[in-house]
Amino acid sequence: MLNPRVLIKGLVLILSLALLGYLFDSSDLGNAINEAWVDAHIRGHGLEGTLLFLAMGMLFTALGLPRQIIAFLAGYAFGLLTGTLLGTLAALLGCLVTFLYARLFGRRLLRDRLGRRAARFDRFVHEHPFSMTLLIRLLPIGSNILTNLVAGVSSARMLPFLAASFVGYLPQTLVFALVGSGINVAPTLRIGAASLLFLASGMLGAYLYHRHRHGLSFDDRIDAALGEVEQS
Figure 1 (spheres, rainbow, N blue to C red):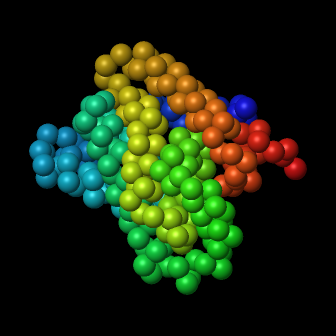
Figure 2 (cartoon, rainbow, N blue to C red):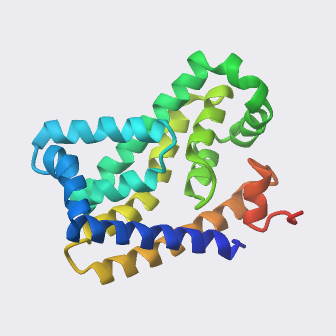
């Protein structure tokens, strides 16, 4: 049901972020980066550090930085549970910024380029905006920023879209926050657990998409990666 290359790319991302965390913890360059941002401005800085992290996470995800990196940094800065919640909230705020930009300012600019995608998104989520958006968010593939822009250009209702996005962000945020929080404590165990959770969440997302999309399509490339259509 799911193209193995999709899962392999996700596992490579997990391992590369784990390696990055190791370099942060053991090398002079990593220490400089940590001191310059996470250690100097986020960790142990209470509400001010939390708000700064949310602001930076919102900005970066709004501009297209992979939300998995924000989840990794959230786990590193705040630990697993708090990092999962804050990483998800940062991604949601970035989603809101991109969505509102497209809806309030970018519709005329983006309509020519995203109009067809927006129409397909409208058809996909029309009957059940929360559950169908959730299907999109649970998939281990697809562009977060493109989905946010398309939703903004479309006529999708904002609150169901945001609520489903928050719930759909949680599984992968948990996975990458687990990697980030395990730099100093049982890294092998945590990376292994994160890899298994990523595989499980990816397969679950693909299964739910297959079972509940009811013949509707959000993106041909996503359908191809999930084995829903023949790849050309």
